[in-house]
Amino acid sequence: MSEIRKLMDANRDYVEDHLGIADAEPRRHLAVVTCMDARIDVFAALGLDLGDAHVIRNAGGRVTEDVLRSLALSSHTMGVTSVVVMQHTRCGLAGMSSAELEEVTGAGIEFFAIDDHVETLRADLQRIRDTPYLSLLHEVAGFVHDIDSGHLTEIIEA
Image (spheres, rainbow, N blue to C red):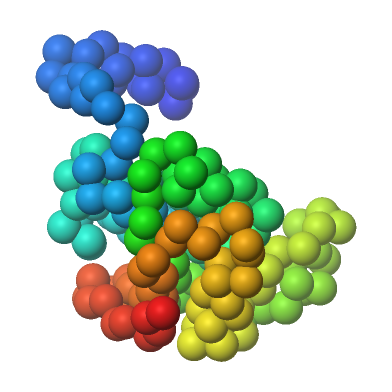
């Protein structure tokens, strides 16, 4: 059976238990930017329930133009006032340069490689703080999630 068929079958089961949350505004006025890594259960790791937060995922949990676009909408139309940028140990973007990733993938794009989580988080959080249209964000923090233990380390709070 193809993966798509498996998804459709699973959806039939999901429909029976679907919560149907009416309000798109996150209850905790929170957005989480994190990596697309399939090993990260964002809701469990942060003690969140469905409807509590916007979760924005990309390779490396980096603050890109598209993340800024999502945060603009979250803050101005959905009441988000806090954001957490959560990277993780053993990330595929750590320890490789963008040039190496371009060579491996054949894609001539910026991969936002991670040399050092602390420096990367500092730069990404500064990008959020320096973006004038994100001035509604009152809390901005950076975490590193240990992929093996599940432990969070708060690196930076602004």
